[in-house]
Length: 467
Image (tube, rainbow, N blue to C red):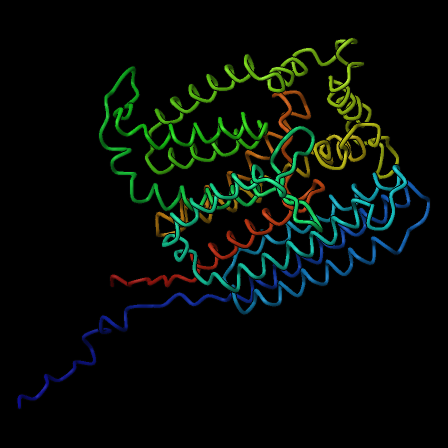
């Protein structure tokens, strides 16, 4: 045996000694999240109290007690996150909580104006659905311990998305609401499967584009400064376009069709870096929308009401522009400071608690309050994008972008329709509007972004001292 060489004490540190592991303190993020959660709950419950004081002159214990119970449940989920997601982003859950509680406050105010109480009140049902949504988010966090697991089931997610979109056409359970056949009757409640389908599509698109992006981004022909893909590579975008058009034609759901196609366009652009995909997608969707407006009466009616909102004949016509015009009148009445919670007349507008919750809040909170809500959405989406680009795996990046963009595009479509920037589509505002399907889907998005952020930050970071 040969003796090992002696170690020179003055030779400097060994290589292993030059590696420093950057220790994290997850409790700091969770403590920050706890502080933000308490602040968000205080604002949300205060909004509910102000809404009841403004509309009734007193505070009823019913909905307030339920909202306090919901807040306790969210705090319990926060406690569970300290164990199952200690490195998660601290801003996502507080923002979702604040938006959720503000929506409950405004919906309860509308229930008071319409004389709705008990289970007939949208606010009561909104609290119950919110609790179910929070529990669903907690279940997602417990079951999915690493976001990369979802990549294995990308084709399963695609199949699930298609199955969910087909469900409303099945006999017995299929249900039409306000002219759109996008609902399923479960007996005790109705559900909109398209809300869950958008999450499944985001998972499928992310998994598919990771494996196919080379063929979609490398080869092509350059025309007018853009590198356009080969004809054989147009299959994915054409399939998604046909799917979106089918949603518009058969489900009579313009907003969901735009949401699905917009989601795919953004994700394929992020995956390939080619602006030509956006150009092709815009041409396809604008062309499809133009054909639909010409051939489908309800789509054409949406465009006509958008362009001629203040026409007196259209305003008085059943199914005309009464809803859109009244929403705009409410926004104008609120002005910058708003009329105050419970002090306006948002109940005059049809579907003020769902499709036109933005107009209701804009009337009573004013443009200042509405901008504050939009800032919350902006921070939420920016956290999703930040987490996506901080990740080291391509699937996580695409999934983060997709989930964040779903919320951003949905807010734009709703706010743009209410403010007459684009035609009305019938989508609901995430976390704010009345609707159990939307609440469950958006809280699941929160859970997936939380899991993504925890996986990204839990990855070891080694700092090697070159000296």
